[in-house]
Amino acid sequence: MTTLLLALVAGAIIGIALGGLGGGGSILAVPALIYLLDFTPAAATTASLIIVAATTATSLNAHARDGNVNWRTGLLFAGAGIVPAMLGGALADRLPAALLTGAFSVIALLAGVRMLHSRRADDDQDRPVRRAQAAGAGAGLGAVTGFLGVGGGFLAVPALISILGLKMKAAVGTSLLVITITSLAALTARTGTAEGLRWEVIAPFTGAAILGAWDGKRIASKISSALLQRVFAIVLIAVAAVMLLDAFV
Image (cartoon, rainbow, N blue to C red; front, side, top):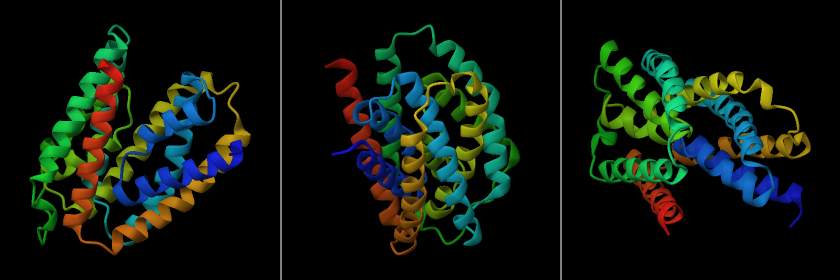
């Protein structure tokens, strides 16, 4: 399979994950870039931020038109997490990679299990959100995601549902706002690492991801919130299992 075709297929899959589930894209993008497209880990991380930021921004527009974005909660959530994410990232540099991978997989596993047992996604209305509650959850999520060095969307959806009481579809749309802001912030901090990026791969990868996000959004609009939540929970648990094996086996 050629590099271009691999980039298109991987991009489409990641776009569907981001558009339909509101997360998972950055987790899928980095290994795809490394293991399928021969990027170095540093280049893959920077490239994934470009891909995810562009894809989530495009998908966010579609979700916003359908009223699935809670702007106040999302802005508080993302804004409160920026500084803790930077502090968490500085601490993470001093710890073994296996410990970070194990910690992330445990958090993902717990989040997935909790979502499987939650029925809040089918509520008729979102629960009123207090600013302090949203900011506190965002700061905590920012610290965790900065510490573990991963995109925020993977944990943002469970947090928006379990902590802030949003329905699944609202959590998906709002998480895209959170991912867009945090990805752009992280990308700004990585401006010195843009040299050597393979734009002939990044460009088609990003284009396919954007198109995939539209398909993911359409898929999400045709199935129930409860089913969407279960699918996302299963994805969380599966990724956690793979990461645990990679860290300790």
